[in-house]
Image (cartoon, rainbow, N blue to C red; front, top):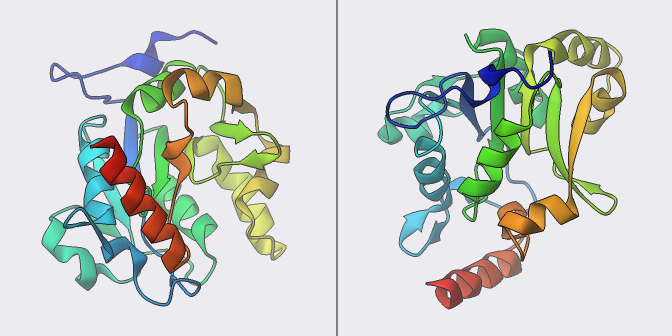
Length: 213
């Protein structure tokens, strides 16, 4: 039933208990040339900025990675993809299969400008949707979204067909798009979705960080 209070369950510390935080760090960073999760901004790896925000929101966090040795120092539970080589859909699929929550908030490992208020809002409107994901114009931010376990079978069907794009699953599940007007109430400059694929993007990110500090 839509509007169920399960969507905002929090622990005594104010952390969400009903949704697990999932950080996707399984990519090969082929466009960037090295592991972008460990590239530093303000003296800390990108992934540590992501963890700082996620740990302030969710009681439980897991890291999806096929190179766990690189991230062992973080002290987080880590899970390798059940089926390797599929990209982000492989991490989403694996997390949904192994986690003990009905839904997870999934984010890429190289998005240091995550906005806590926006994420809280996304959790609050989850209701009975299978997916809650931001949409800015034509662009869907698939790696900044909530996915529920009912996505498992549609993902499996797509994998069987060789379809690995995350957004291709959306046609088979119920999706709540968070539109630009909603997003800008919390994140006026849409910084939440900034990530690093090329060195020039890292330079821009560092400049933005300095200007906002």
